[in-house]
Length: 79
Image 1: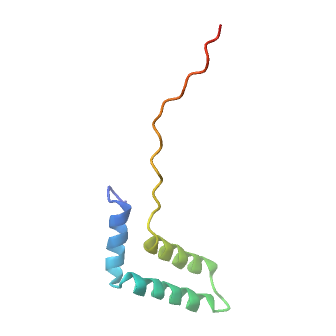
Image 2: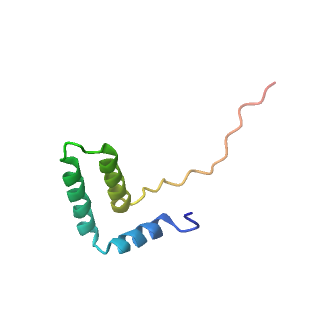
Image 3: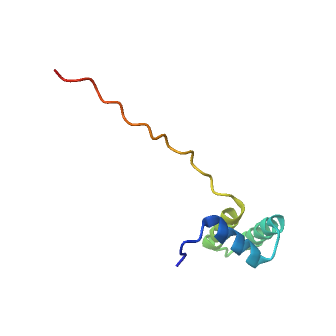
């Protein structure tokens, strides 16, 4: 269970657990994907998992711009 932790907090804890800088972590994931993807019996799920983990740790979540809270304009009166 994830609990009330923010995504940025989880990312920083995972980065810290790896004990590498962001550049080192990115390079490690890239090496792992290259080494894993070269074998004749490569499992695509393993490469996809490495790619997804790398992207989740490296990319910051894009924030959506706040929506406008304007009310709708009522149509013309019937009559």
